Image 1 (tube, one colour):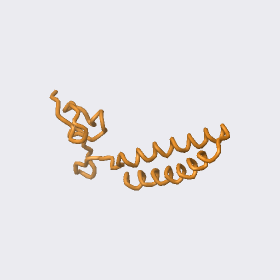
Image 2 (spheres, rainbow, N blue to C red):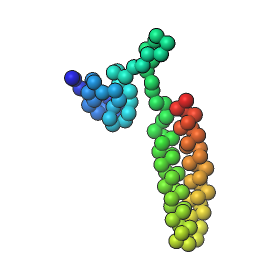
Image 3 (spheres, helix red, strand yellow):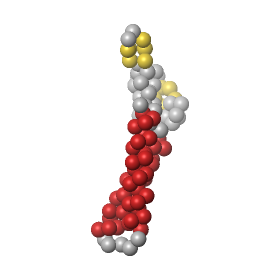
Image 4 (cartoon, helix red, strand yellow):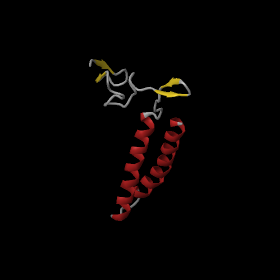
Length: 98
């Protein structure tokens, strides 16, 4: 067993690992055979869409918390911005993942 460097996150990864434990990039050991041909499965969902989903979820939670505590304007802004951004992030993650 040797260690190689992941091209995406620069972590040391075992040559026996299917994926990088740091970023999830498929390594050389992971290949499937479909129709007699070797195929690599690669998740194409960009980290930016996952980050957008995370941030919009935080905005929604902040908006809900603000509504519960009866704050003035900012909960409505959080909800109005968070919900469409969450929907957009989910759609784009689905679209790019295939």
